Amino acid sequence: MHRRQFLTRAAAALAAAGLPLPLLTAGATPLPLGQRHAFDYAWLKGHARALAARAFSPRSDALPAPVASLDWDQYQSIGFRQDHALWADVAGAKFQAKFFHLGLYFKRPVRMFEVAAGQAQELAYDPGMFDYGRSGLKGARLPRDLGFAGFRLNSPDDLQRDWAAFLGASYFRAVGASMQYGLSARGLAIDTGMPRPEEFPDFTAFWLERPAPGSDTLVVYALLDSPSVAGAYRFAITRGEPLVMDVDAALYPRREIERLGIAPATSMYQVGENDRRMDWDWRAEIHDSDGLAIHTGAGEWIWRPLGNPAHLRFNAFADDNPRGFGLLQRDRDFDHYQDDGVFYEKRPSLWVEPKHGWGRGSVQLVEIPTVDETFDNIVAFWNPEAKPQAGQELLFGYRLFWGEQAPSQPPLAQTVATRTGLGGVVGKKRERFSWRFAVDFAGGELAALAKAGAAVEAVVETGRGKVETVSARPLHAIDGYRAMFDVVPPDDSTAQIDLRLFLRQDGRALTETWLYQWNPPPPGERVLY
Image 1 (cartoon, rainbow, N blue to C red):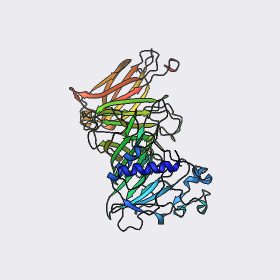
Image 2: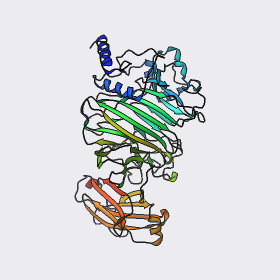
Image 3: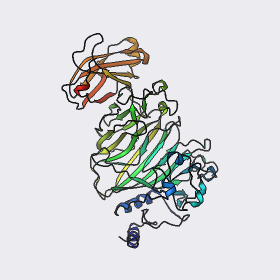
């Protein structure tokens, strides 16, 4: 299709949809910067619906050679000038926005708008906004329409450290009181963990709503686009501990989507107390999150420790109207990490809480092998049971909580540690290979029961193999209990063995449900020592 023909058809579709702006696609002619137009979330949803009715138009990632060739250190040296921060001159504003420069991994420009009094105005890229540091770039030689890569948010009382950032595809992240970044979220995940390349939708434009003086909440809108879907997003962001993002998403599929991921969280797990496969570093634990927590629609609380498997591992936890789920960092002990540079014990947890019923589906977890901490290898999201179809409107509302603890806590005791190692009885010769699991629980009634030395039962179930040497005894160091058991593989297979554990007394559950997936080593590696 010729560009003129494309623009003619885009204008016709625009008129049919009743929208006052051309579609924000790669082939559309941009409005003159500074022109205002009426804007609200209803307009953005209509805009996304009209965009989805058209064939996907890929955006160019071609950059000027000096920008495209930036390495990590050069890109990191580029800073945004404080005197150009959005709302820096707005009296009483508790928020400021600064923009990221294009380069390195961020090659597709993202349009930026400010919204004030129901009117949106596009913000122009200007090389004078940036301090190019040691990058080698010369602002005067850069195109005046280069564009931005994303944005970050600061507060007037701390202009150096940002507390939220939207950068790259549909990725964004935030911090709680620790001001320590960790895992990321995404607007949408498509075909994650499938035997084909994953599709990464982009946020192609943002609308930042000017906050009222003294307001603690900032509203950001985003347009999402990809070969499979277009979407409109609204984020109401409130700082605090935890930081809360109230999210509304309207999705308009272009085709059937086999695996749709709603509210996806992306994290990293290299090594920890339960999985030492990549334990070659001087630090004992390296992870942004140590477990997936789920509060099911039926009210059950589940804890699934994360791992770094030898091969991609996929799990789906079927549910009906989940109450919440998230990737959490429960271990807050510096001594367990010993990293005084990135402080893994301060990494935020991320909890997802639906605002209305999501129906039937599953919380899905993808764990990908990694050899170091620079690769995010953990993804968790909600997958609706019904596959999205072309022409549908899918509406999802949820809240994201970023902070040290999830806002919803089980009334029962929680898992606080999972350790594994060779099984058997100390002092006795091992006749067969087995694997030991030691799971610590604390909270709920356990402190009082431990003090009294009460008998507590460990209930263990396995999908394959034999469970033996099961015990549960008080662990006064944590005012809780430790459950221990061994699993004997049924054969020489390395196939996954599913485990389930909780503590009970007199038929009452005392703890959340601990789930685990263990792959026995091949026979040649089953050393009995």
